[in-house]
Length: 136
Image 1 (tube, rainbow, N blue to C red):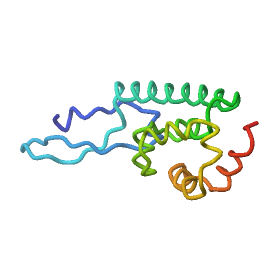
Image 2: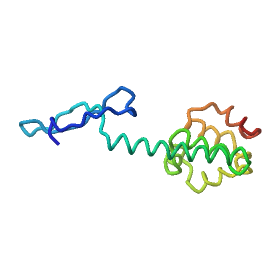
Image 3: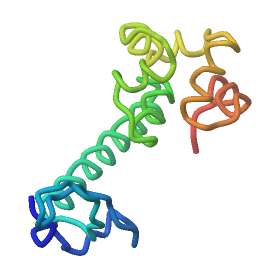
Image 4: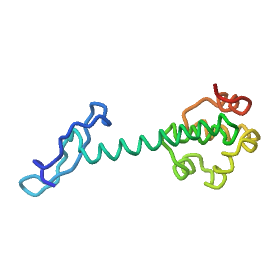
């Protein structure tokens, strides 16, 4: 892409910031250029966020009905999926899916909850409280 072809479509997902893209100048060298956004990228980001919000709402319903642990809801709230959560926590994906079961979640150790708390940026006490009560 050439410098004058760098997209400058307004993008609400950037939150007023810009993104650094690399383009070729007149001499054929790569150089950095700020982009205000690109419409197809903005659209796909909005679709992805909407899908995560739907998954979070479904997980919250499952949590409130006692069919799932809060980990599933929190995973979607913090824009993660099972592979990303596995990478951040160091747990295998099958163990994370197992921890989605309420009975298993209630038996998680402080060490395991600490790993999840660090991944979500939460206090461990909050995850311990979730072991004992349903959300309001």
